[in-house]
Every structure is written in C-alpha cells, then in structure tokens.
Image (cartoon, rainbow, N blue to C red; front, top):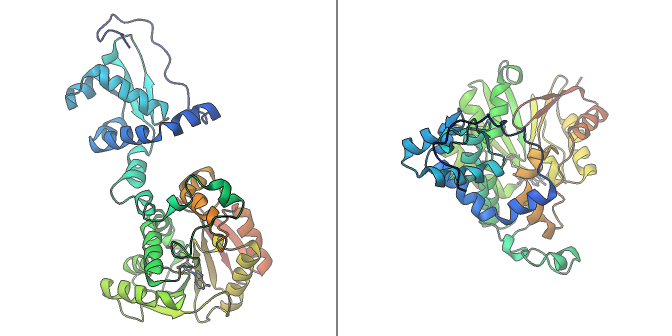
Length: 357
Ligand SMILES: C[S@@+](CC[C@H](N)C(=O)[O-])C[C@H]1O[C@@H](n2cnc3c(N)ncnc32)[C@H](O)[C@@H]1O
C-alpha cells in the first residue's frame, strides 16, 4: 500500500457499497483468518476505537492523532474491520488521512457481548468441545460421542447442573431486555408466574427486582433446588416471592395456581411432539384468562449464529435434540392447544404470548 498521506484531492470514490451476505469464498477466507480477525476486533474494542467508529464518521487522520497510531498501519487495520463488514469506508480523496470510517450500528455493544470479558462465547469454552474436534466423521457415523462425564442431557451431576445453569444465566441479558420492553403489557398488576425450566432462578430474580407485585416460582428438576435457594438468598428474597417447585415435566402435569406460565429457552430442546405436549400441559394448568409466555431461540440468521457453539457441540449428544424452529411453529401449536390471541412481542429475543379463553 503506497498511497500518499496528503496527496491532492481526486474525484471522490463512492462509499463502500451496502453490505451483502459474504460469498462462500469470502466467508471461508474470513473463517480461516478467524483468530487474526478476533485479534483485530478485540484490539479495536480494547483501545476504544469502536467508541469512535460507531457514532462516526471519523477520519483516519483524526483517529491516528487521537490514539498516536501510525496512519498507514491504522489504514490496514481498518481494512481488516471493513473486510469483516464491521465498518464502512468513504475515500473522498487519495489522501489516506481523509478516509472516513463509520462502524456499523450496534458494533460496540456486539463486540462487548460476544468478545468482552464476561461474554457468552468465553463461558462456552469450559465445555469439552475438543472431544469432537477433528473427529466429526466418526461422530457423524455414530462411532464417537460426547461422553456423559463431559456433558449429559439433562445435566445430571451437581457440577454439570451448576455449570449449565450458570451458562444459561450468563445469556439472559437480551431476554431480560425483551421482558423489560413489554413489562406494561405483561404485568399490568400483580401476578403469580411459574417459570417452567427456570434455571437457577436468575430470570425470576431480575423480574422480581423490577416488579414489586410479581411472585415467581421456578419449576425445575429437583437437582436444581439448591441453585434456586442460593439465588433467593443472594437476592434477599422470601420463598413467597421466589419459590421453587421441583418436578419433571416429562413425567407429570404442570402445577396449577398461576396467572402465567413461562417457557424461556426450554421448548427448543425437545422434539416437536414433546414441545407441543408441553404447551398443552400449560393450557391444562392455567386458569381461564391465564397466559403462556414463550421466549425462544427462533430460527433466524442471527440466532443460528449465536447458537453455533451448541449446534456444533450437540452433534455428539443424542439425548438433546435442540432445534431452532420458526416462530410459526409456536403460534400454530399454541392455537392448536386451545390458546387464543397468540402473538409475538418483538425484542432481541422475541416473546410469544397467548391466552387461555
Ligand atoms: C436451556 S435451559 C433454560 C434455563 C432458563 N429458562 C434460561 O433461559 O436461562 C433448560 C431448563 O429446563 C430444565 N429442564 C430440563 N428438563 C426438564 C424436565 N424434564 N422437567 C423440568 N425442567 C427441565 C433444565 O434444568 C433447565 O433449567
């Protein structure tokens, strides 16, 4: 790269064209360079470059001066970000210093969420994915699997239960955002909620903090009770506000006495027939006017990408059929179960809500 830093202006070149999905060849180039690409994005995050780029536009000259960088080096660094589709570039003249950049919307928050110190992807590294790595032909032929000691579904040993529920709790951010955005419609006054498959009670804890007239019981396998108790004690909540009901929804009816039942990231773990039966079980348990809330991993490009780790990892785990489904599956199953007014509340994790007539 030899363009002068302060050459006379030339006719402005067009801005980078709007980003389309990468071609297979481009995607594979980027994947092969994954470790280097992460190095670039983590560096940009750590150095505060993303903070300047996202509101943008900012020129190479301004960025170089502000951070004390060598402009020609920064130019190549920003080419890396552009090739990842994370910044857009305008080159109004041949002078490198004049090149203008703008980070794509949401870049800073996405980098923090995916690569930051408490990111979901980092938590996933604790799982034994290397047991499958390089052995996928055997795995696909059913000759090699994830060992039950490494991962069992549902998790069985106390360590597995605790590790899994901690991973789930770490990913609750976008779900809470959706619940928050629709709080007025969800909890107009007091309500008793049963959070089915409610993990270690972290979602319940957050909801209770924000809604003084809400009480939540977590319904989960008995092995998780100690985790919910720990969440309750840590949050200083009473058993009335954050309760626990031990049970196995594959073997018994869901408990009654609640105004609403939620399934948060639960139904996609089961074959369609089981997921449908669980929605029917919710219908049977709710009173007239009761609502079911389903917050799920719908099958969108964004969600498939976020789930890539589990798609890979669970290739070796037959007990878990984890299937991202289109939202229509849930709308249809709820209506078939007898619910009415099944609809989607938008958010980072959409929420399907339906009412028992
Ligand atoms: C993918 S996790 C989701 C946890 C939590 N709702 C969240 O989103 O963070 C699935 C939950 O379903 C629970 N679960 C699995 N099988 C169950 C069963 N047969 N009966 C009751 N709960 C079950 C697990 O213990 C776990 O808490």
